[in-house]
Image: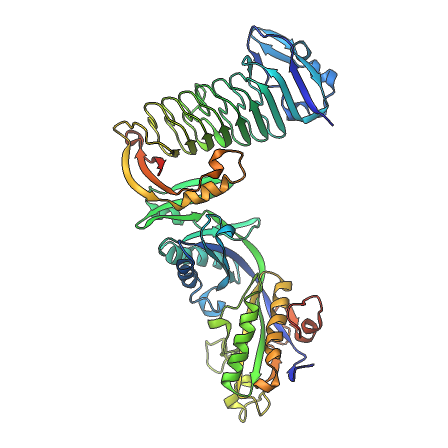
Amino acid sequence: MNALTFTLKIKPQQRIDCSPLTPDNLAGKSIANIAAIELQSGKKKLHVDAVFSISGDDASHIVIKKSRSKLDYIGCGMETGRISVHGDAGSYLGFQMAGGEIILHGNADAFAASGMAGGIIHIHGNVGDFLAAAIAGDRKGMQGGTVIVTGNAGDRVGDQMRRGILLIEGNAGSYCASRMLAGTIGVLGTVGDYIGYGMRHGTLLLTKTPALHATMQDCGLHTLPFLGLMFKSFGNLPSKFAKISKTRVQRYAGDLANDGKGEILVLK
Amino acid sequence: MILNGVQIDDTFAEAFNMRGTRVIITAQNLKWARHAANAITGFATSVIGCGVEAGIERELSKKETPDGRPGITIIMFAMGSAVLMKQLETRVGQCILTCPTAAAFSGIEGNDRINLGKNLRFFGDGFQTSKLFGGKRYWRIPVMDGEFICEETTGMVRAIGGGNFLIQATSQPQALTAAEAAIEAMRKIPNVIMPFPGGVVRSGSKVGSRYKGLFASTNDAFCPTLKGITKTELTPEIESVMEIVIDGLTEADIRKATRVGIAAVCKLGAKKGVKRISAGNYGGKLGQFQFHLHDIMKDKKLSDGKP
């Protein structure tokens, strides 16, 4: 069986909601049935075959080729299977994803992994603002699973993130881990201003000491055995984080303006 | 059956259903993991007086432990799940939480999960924090040496306690030497512990007593100094008897440990003063499992150590 492949054949003028194209939703459907699925694009509904050339038959592995940043909600709510995206993805990549795997060979737009509860998203590129953050009206961002970003991330990474692991191998923008509720964020590169602003709980792991605002407090230099546990659990992940074995960190706690139980750990 | 001059009685050990769990203890080095393991398995020789029976199973290398530090596995058994849960929590709280650099992790899978650090976390007084890695929750509790790491739960399984055999020798040093040889061989078998001091018990008991309120008392039939005044099980040349009690996760584990232990004793042979091997039972009326010595020694599948 060959992977079910959607090759983008138009240059979209409007954003297209690709949320129906998940392994769970397409399992057992014929090409004709899949072609007839309607995708919301602005105020129009477009049939799948008006947007994509379709080939293959294995719905457990979906491939999107020539993808562009107008394709929103790729992998929305998916529970099983794999989606490989070649090209850029739009906003809300893996929105409320519960399981399975998304591999993006390109850049993603805003709100990737928002509401994600399980599975893994591997972004071989950069990602926009609000990675793993809560959408307006939601009180929690990402609630589980793992996201690996090989490039850089925008502002507000992990805003109101509740659970899960977010590993950014490049840089992150301002307000990283703002209002974070729990979970783990790692950034190998640099971070912007106001890191951990309003952070309530959770762990932010860095390699370089950031500029800290007044309500983040230094707790000293420590060797924390839980980091050994964490890096060992990263062992199978295709990420640079899997190669870290240090457990010596400078620990900063905060945001004291919001309970102060979060921590920023800087590897030494 | 006679092996190397040692007579093996045609009898059986009687064993009971128990609940068991395993905990992995890690620390900065093996020395401190052993301190913690010794503490948590202390005063845990018999369920009669200690609530649980516990012992060290084996050492773990850095590669085998969840946090990449040296470790030790301990197994703990109790007659019921409620006792096991309570004892485990108390013992982890008093013996692992308190031990410098030590951490505790689940050492056994199973649908029945019991608390390891789930309630101990409150020692953190609000400063505790949890981390979820690979679907398992770990608690980080701030303590004076840094942080105490403890997995939230561990598994509980159905297990067996009370496998045993008795070594009868012509002198006390010879009986003890034979018991030590058995223990050394049996410690290499996974999934079993020998809960008594050094793995050996010298005070085997019978059910009941002449005194009110005592439900167990000395097994006078095997006491060598009473040979002339009681209905003894001992032949005249026997001067000392040592018992080895085995708790294991499965019947097969106890059979294997019994076989390896008896084989080690028989290897010393009658020339070293070991005359007979017997086993303790209650006539087959109380326990759910019977470990027949002849059957075990004839079982070719339990091939570790030649009989």
